[in-house]
Length: 577
Ligand SMILES: Nc1ncnc2c1ncn2[C@@H]1O[C@H](COP(=O)(O)OP(=O)(O)O)[C@@H](O)[C@H]1O
Ligand SMILES: [Mg+2]
View 1: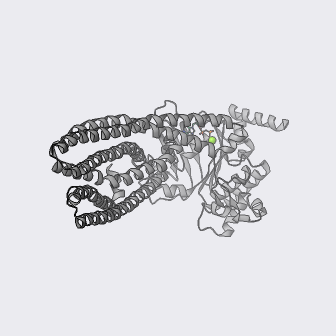
View 2 (view 1 turned 60 degrees about the vertical axis):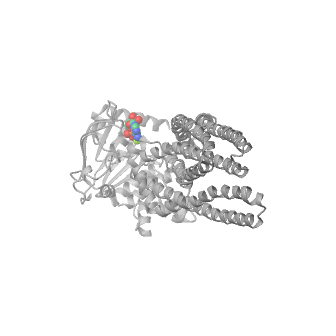
View 3 (view 1 turned 90 degrees about the vertical axis):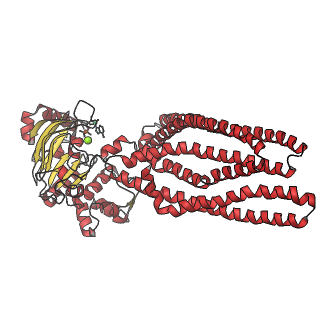
């Protein structure tokens, strides 16, 4: 919890003013009944109108001050809690940006969304509530207790019996409620994951006519959340009736005992009104405390979940890099006995002792069945994941020794699941190079065979792309993504199945453009089609995480059984097409 102090400090003044101002209200609440008692006990029997008016004015003035205190307290507690939440959210978001792919895999995106929104809101609410109650509830409790005891000590013993019973009841409620709130947030995660996944992939859902199944999946998560929430809140709503019962029983007891005292003349009638008010105040302050504590149990569950984000060790950083100044100058890539797996507790490696070299200017093709490990392999080059054994070297330097910034600046990668962002085409392409001129952007687009279709749009490069680039075709999107990577002028260019939706003729033109524009760049091209890699200097054939063949097309066709099979199956397909 210490780490949260950081977000309190800048707003310390608000955090202080809020409860202090609320205390003003408390003083008023405690003094008011006494003034009223005075009117009844002294003013009315004596028929002293002046006294009654004075007391009345005192009460009115008190009410005004109380109002100012209450409004001020509310104002500052709102400011404190909202500022706290905004600062925390900013840091948590920044932390998520630092996360490695492996970190993100571990939290689901849905859960990250819940944590950044709902969980932080829980904290904000409890701070707002807590600041208002922090001094007020105990202040009112103590004040009312003192007044009640001073007024009538023997009658005050009634309270002594009620309080311990209530405290025990509250502790019991808390202990049951806490784990239930924790479980509830987890169910909310599941719901958010389901919504998030559905919305991002709504097109796939619709094209497979899976709406019904998706609805069922959602309904299940929703029902689960409902049941979980009821289980948690059931406990909470129990407290209110218990409190009310206690309040009524106590009032009854007080009236009973006080009535006898009044009859024998030991107590003034006015004191009874004041005394019952104090009793009610004591119980209300207990009730407020109970509410704060109950909501705290929910907020603590949320705070833990946010801490998990803040305290996650980003498992891929360049803190221990020894050559932070080094930049990628040539683009030579070497894998030396590289082994890798996603789940460290699993036995089988996804990549098993991979060794190969790609020299500057070369085209290295990678071919292999789906799930054979092609994507995993190239992701190790810009360190999207770290290998578990062996070494990945770029220009003879271990990738772990570069600063991440320098390494990734040197590597242009078009991911298999590439996305564009909402904004203009220009905005998107400039991810590759913020300062690129229009000519440079056009040149990159031309190499990627994107210039023609972009120019055909009425707004050209200023065309707005929808979220994820919905308003361009799959093949156009791929070409824009290639152009974006080209603008980086990378020393190493990796295309992970990036031309799968582009027709073969266009793809050939892209390859030809590479030969001219990217003569010195190391090009690593993963492809499904043999034609995409046929001209490569070297082709690697991957199967189940191992290199089973390496050589030129002609060599492999002669020597590598697996390669020949792929060729033959594709030739057959073409012949039948
Ligand atoms: N993020 C991930 N987390 C866990 N396993 C993964 C992840 N990505 C891929 N895999 C697994 O690693 C293996 C290799 O996947 P991948 O490299 O994507 O294959 P390819 O690109 O050749 O189709 C597959 O068995 C796949 O299920
Ligand atoms: Mg892949």
